Length: 48
Image 1: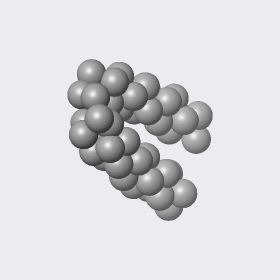
Image 2 (image 1 turned 90 degrees about the vertical axis):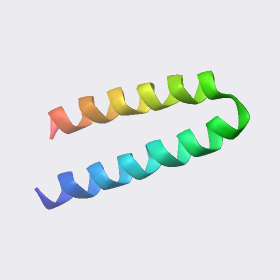
Image 3 (image 1 turned 60 degrees about the vertical axis):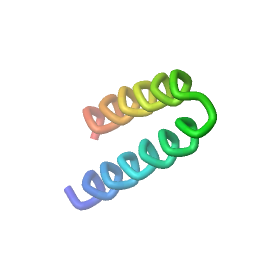
C-alpha cells in the first residue's frame, strides 16, 4: 500500500511537471501528454 501511494504521488507530480512545461510551449500537446501519462498510471496502479 505504501509503494502504491508513492507511485501515485510521483505520477501526480510528473503529470503536473509535464503539464507545466508543456503548457508554456504548446497547450494541446501538454494535454495529450497528461492524458497519456494518467492512463499509463491507471494501468500501472491496476497491476499492483
